[in-house]
Image (tube, rainbow over all chains, first blue to last red; front, side, top):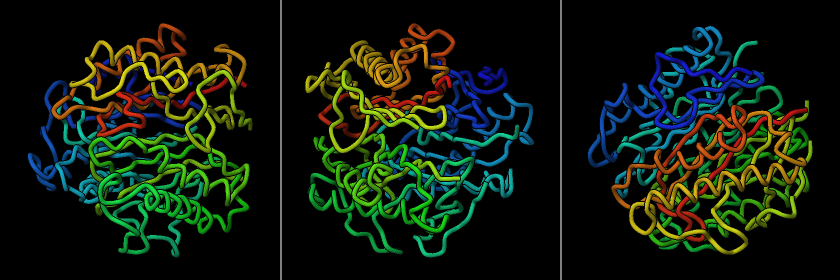
Length: 145
Length: 145
Length: 145
């Protein structure tokens, strides 16, 4: 087991770790689309943030998740397979295109990792997210021994 | 590891897979209560959809999750134990009976699989779901070697 | 595999188990801040429940998750590492301090278990939770053989 804080990824907003690897599985903390304290965009998708921008934010979150693993383990080569992605989209009333938003993340994972980036996925629309972010992404990833 | 797209289950709404099996664990993508593009029902539970219908939708989602695994692996016999079910219920303001809704899924799992269908569970009420669905279900399932 | 109902933790609100242990991993059902049918507090964080009380509720949920594992396995000693915590916070419109609320849970885990209580985390703000609870917590925990 390794449970290391990576120093070149976003500092967690509390008393927790960005990544824990246990028995060949990496658990990644939920990632907002931010660099340090600056969010790529703020607000509800379908009102403040349009789908195109939300897709960019989703792709950014996907990269942050992979970056957190890569910094912990020493590079993308250690990633065997993305197993599961959960995307929480802060949604304006009546906004039901969470899947389209999440395609931004899914396409990015496959573009970066090829078949190893293929994954299962759950997309839900939530009421509010930390810091007013429009999206939060978490992953479970298989790691090479 | 096997990461196969099953051909007789719902086509995913994006660039992802319905099921991935890794190291004896099946990860299943979030399932809406739909056949193809047709949802069993639409709207918020507690307003547009009553509890009885939402329970049927929950049971339907549970079957879709198991069907996705069965089609990938060749039948229910390969399922060792349902480990975890997360149910997201699109909830009207003030609706707090998410657990009752999810009993529709839990009862179906046990009816179909017996003790192997027993599971841990999380039920939450969300703001919006893809396609306006009233419920979305995901699972983690242990698979026989 | 062991899938036992623990008798001194909260009775699940449906046809499911509080904890399932499979292949060295404990899956814990979502825990509300309740003892029996009595919730520590009710309502939305940011309106009915302030951050300080919500943090206490989060810590209480964290203890309930660990208690459920400890009762199933015979004590905290069997816990190798908390791997992942997901916290769903019932949020008033505009409330975006879900991370601060979840620090109540994170701090409690580390206070109780030391390094074994360090974890990855996802915090989201949801519309409604069962029984009107302000928070629900779930965990994935590595167990000693």
